[in-house]
Length: 146
Image (cartoon, rainbow, N blue to C red; front, side):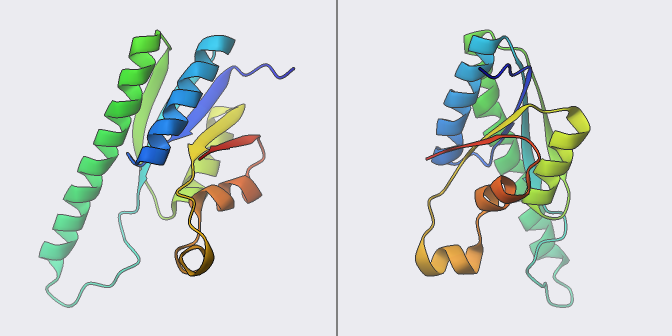
């Protein structure tokens, strides 16, 4: 049986992330593990802003920050209610999957618990899947919650 001491919960505030938070908090409580909650914001998004698009970039960054904080607050409330020790932060890095994996390595994470949006078909090919990338590249176990 595995012995998890430090669990990572990446969140984007979505319904699937909230389901993952429920699972991560339950596992942390059962194992007496610490929980790290992160949300990743890409400070230079993939979209290109036209010249003078600073206003659009500012709007994107404000919305991304608000979404990240909301996701962290939701997961933090679950952890607090369950009496689970946690820390949280917003990662401002390019690419959610490499950021999540880098954080896991740096912090000595034993398990990553994350939600999946369940994209299939063309959406999956075009948009990719952060969960799939983390699952493929992670050096530690990953539990994907649907």
